[in-house]
Picture 1 (tube, rainbow, N blue to C red):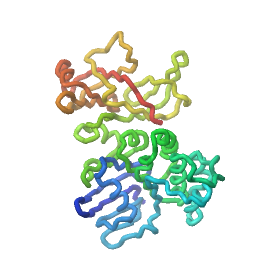
Picture 2 (picture 1 turned 90 degrees about the vertical axis):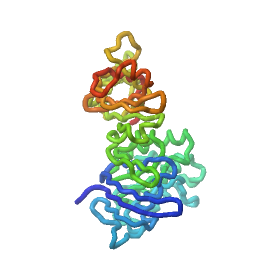
Picture 3 (picture 1 turned 30 degrees about the vertical axis):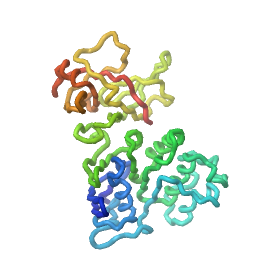
Picture 4 (picture 1 turned 60 degrees about the vertical axis):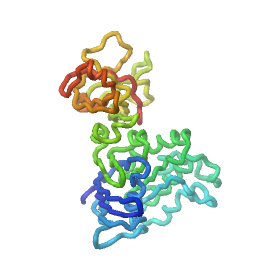
Length: 355
């Protein structure tokens, strides 16, 4: 069976035109990313069948829409999580969770399993969902969608309506779903930190069109895309926890390109972790620095340099099989004489552990 999602849609509205095409893996999280008004939610609604758009949609080998037929919403095996949880106020947490579960014959996951994934077990008997925190309500909404046993999970900015505390509360549960789920997830967001924490694949939208579509880091490293201009531009590194230094409360992460030391991580040696390195936290030296407080210094090769406004440049560097971005001043570029092909040292001042 052909695994993956293939979507081609055209839709015209007054003042807006969607003409978007992308292919995504049949498992994992694909982020639909772009600024407000770029067409992310409209594209998601087309995939759900809530918008009668012209086009084609194939989900893991099953044609949901083409020029000959259009599968209605209720026959598309999908779960949809909106910005607002919209729980049933008269039902308990358990009954809210199991609302879709009781109406599906093909039960792929069990309520206890989903409650454990989302940390909801202690809340199941609560009969006042309106008094729960925003993060708790949204976790229930996600669980309800999963218990309908979808072949595709759609999430439309599920953290947008939450305050900072609730966002931080729910992100670890979304990261766990990322590891556990065997179905594809399409995740709409305009927050790059959510993309970095959760996504495997990135579809970048601008003014109703897909301007980039690919594996997360293959897209994030491109200096010609809008993501490179953001203040929090950077890359994600998939690493393995290799050593704990108990004396200094540090942990070593090994990745395809070297090692990074971070503050001690409460996970066992051998665990897979995801780290994020921002371009603004990487400086460049021509020779191996000595007498510096920066612990993480990696040998790198300059791949590409692009101007970033009147005073800065973005530099893409290869580090073994991995990539780092650096944002430095134009003056620093000229003083160092940086050019593609040069061998340099990347000094990583800060590493954010994502999962």
